[in-house]
Length: 176
Image (cartoon, rainbow, N blue to C red; front, side, top):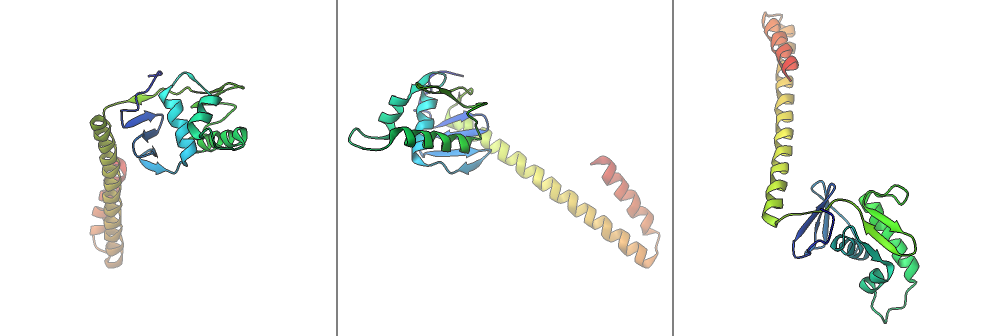
């Protein structure tokens, strides 16, 4: 959904990122990403007006008070560059932030806003899926170690168990 984003929604999703507007946290694939305050404020401004140009002047007013004396051009460029670095974005081939020369910036990726409960449920489903995959992988490794131990024991004692161990290993490797 490209268009204005309500900041009353706590979580905003775009690409592999989730932004929590209340806590000021940015998450990528379920892992928190460090984002300094000024790049965060720029990202919020761009998301609030997704698909529209956010002027450099609007960003200046959002980042610095009127009585603050700062090299605005350098400060804004540095903050936008930091934001692009964190997002893995590029000036020449933008995925998220498009530069509008001498005017401002526009957020160009599709933005999803869902109620918090729905997003939490989806995040929990993804987390459980990853844990299940890791657990399955662990059990598979334990089975291979067990079969390997059987092969070694059979070879050591030269018993007919060796044939059973080879069959079990063959079934395991052909199925998984």
